[in-house]
Amino acid sequence: MSHSVSKIWTKDFFILSAVNFFLTLVYFLLNATITSYAMNEFHATTGQSGFIAGIFIIGALLGRLLTGRLVLSKKILISGLVLFLATVLLYFFDFGIYFLILNRFLNGISVGIATTVVGTVVALVIPNSRRGEGISYFAVSTALATGLGPFIGLLLSQNANYNLIFIFSLILGVISLGISFNLNVPQVINQSNANKKALFSNLIDPKTIPIAIIIFVSAFSFSSILSYINLYAVELNLVSTASFFFMVYTVSVLISRPFTGRMVDKLGPNIIMYPAFILFGLGMILLSFAGSSMPLLLAGVLVGLGFGNISSISQTVAVSQATPQRVGLATATFMIFMDLGNGVGPSVLGLIIPATGYRGMYQTLTIIVFMSLILYYFLHGRKAKMKQQQAL
Image (cartoon, rainbow, N blue to C red; front, side, top):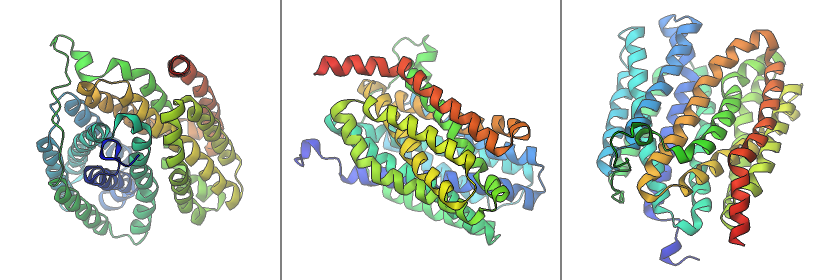
């Protein structure tokens, strides 16, 4: 297994995972703290601070759309990281709230560009026969950052020094740029369609859309936890437990990933995807009934095993369906739908919370998660089952 042809743990794989970890960490770190920063430092309204959080994701979407159709190269990654450093530096300057909004937008574009290049290149440096396993390991860097980002952000912001958050982000940006110079990026010919009129298929990969819809619905549901678990915990008097929710989530992702990725390579995605939806749904229902620390933390374990595996395995499906020339486009398409779910979720859910309360919101999302299991069957599960039977 370890001969060079099928090696996963190469120097490039380590560098790509590290850069992905640092950038995703900064993304979630800033997302968890920027609303309180805008309110405390700029006296922004809740509407404005929500917009300041959301504009970043719109920037990231634009960055991904642009990158998905470019020729992938080290130059584009380095440019994205330089822009990232510049925009983190601009957080130190106070030129008013509109400047902050513009900078969040540019910061989002830089993260969109860099993470799309990284996500694409990693799919190309992993041996085809071990793609599920490789992407599962790579996706650990995203899962770790998703758990640690909000945790570190809330920890630093409770000491109410936002400059510390920006300094920390800047250091991670410098490290990412520094190690990226050692990367060997495989040169891939432009993914875009030869027919220049086919604008849509040059920006979005149509073959990726079915699995991308699944990640959109799943990320939409998961965003309720990222955005509202702290407020829900205040209501339950479980504030100290809430920060550990993300730790437990991360640990359960870390423990399950090595097994689930390997199983997908051998037996296809369905063997993990169906149980993952059930576990995710059970986690949401437990969350909605939580009254003490124990159920809240157990919900974290179930959501980690559920959503944590849905996100990595659907990414494996997305890139496995694409030709090498269109892996960049497939990666961008997948990430765009994931960002949309993360971005649209908090705003839409924010509108229903006054009517349902937090418990009611999590109960509603439980139904959505269980229904997405059926949606998965029609969009991809059936096809994957037939493919698996043909392979046997």
